[in-house]
Image (cartoon, rainbow, N blue to C red; front, top):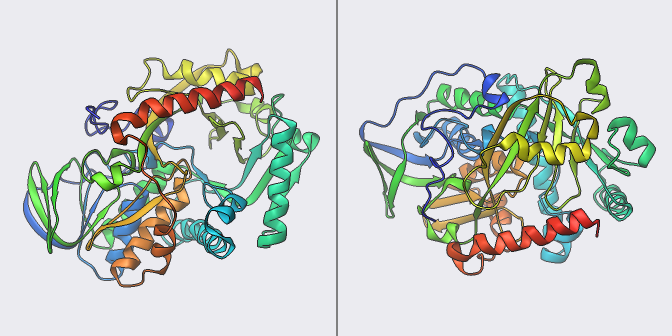
Length: 436
C-alpha cells in the first residue's frame, strides 16, 4: 500500500486532537519494549480487541505481553462514534440467507452477549465512560422507513427481541427533529459511550491484572513457529501464542488477513456546546445512525456538543479540512447548524470486509486474528478479544462460529481494492443523493 497508516495521518505517540482526547482520563504512558522477552501470549494492537484479549487472558492466569505501535486506544477504538449496536453489522435476515437460520441465530446470540460483555466490563471495572442506552436508526425515504419497521418486527417476532420500537415520522421527529428523516426505529438494548475512556480503562484493568503493556513498539516481523518470534525496533518477544488485533493498521504483517480486510477512513466533528439548543438536535440522550450507504451517525456528548460522523473519503490521506468535510452531511441533517462553530474534527482508520462481516481466523496453528468490524466494532471487537482468549484456553465454540462467516478476498488484492471501493462508494453515494 506504500503508506504506513500508523503514521501517515497522525503524530507519532500522540492521540489525535479529538473531543475524546480532550476529555480523556489520565493514564501514564507505558514504556516501549526494551530487549528480548518471553510470554505465554503476545497480543499485537491495543484497541478494543487486543485490550479485551489481554485482560481476559491475564485474568485466566496467562503471562501476556501487549505491543502497541502508538498509544493504547490510539486507532479506531479511541476515535469512533461510540455506538454499541445489537446483532452483527449485517441484518439478521441477510445472515439467514447467507449462513442459514441456525447459524444466524448463533450470531444474534453472540451479538447480544457482546453488548452484555461491554456493560459487564464497565460495571466490574467501574469504568466511567458515559455509557447510556438507546440507538435509533433513521430512514430518509419511505422505502427506508418501511425496511426499518419490517426489520424491527422480524427481530420482535423471530428473535424475541422486545427492546426495539418502530417509530412513525411524528414519533421519530419527537426524538430527532431533523427534516431529513421520515421515521425509523429505536433500539433501547443498544447504547453509546466515550470510546477512548473505555479503552484507557480497559488498559488500566489489563495492567492491574498483570499484562505487560508496551506502547510505541511497532511489530516489524512475525516469524511463525513454536514459539513464534515477534521482532520490534527495540527488542523481540517469543510467545507460545500470538493474537493479531491490528484491524486497519495491520499493514503487511499477515497477507491472508490483508487480502480480506481493507482500511478505510471516517471522520467526526464536535460542535461547540449547544446548551438549551441541544433539544433541537436530540430530545433524548440517544445515538442515531441513518440508512444511507455512506452512513451518518451522531449523538450528544456529555457537555451537550453534537458529535457528528460522516463524510466520504477516497485515498488514505486525511483531507486538509476535516471540519468542512463533516459539516456538509451535518447540514443536510440539521440545516439550522449551518453556522455553528466546530471545536474539534478528526479522522480515523477502520477496516471493512467484502461482506461487511468481521474476519476471525486462525492464520497459523498458534496465531489468531480478528478484524474487519466494518463500523460495528465496539461490542464485536471487545467480544472478539474474549473469544480469542477463550480459544487459546481450548474453548473454541464462539470463535469457530465467527470464523465460519464467509469472507472472500477483495478482488485484485491490496493493489486493486481501493480503486474498486472508490467506484462502489461513488455509485452508492450518488444513489443516496438521488434518493434511489
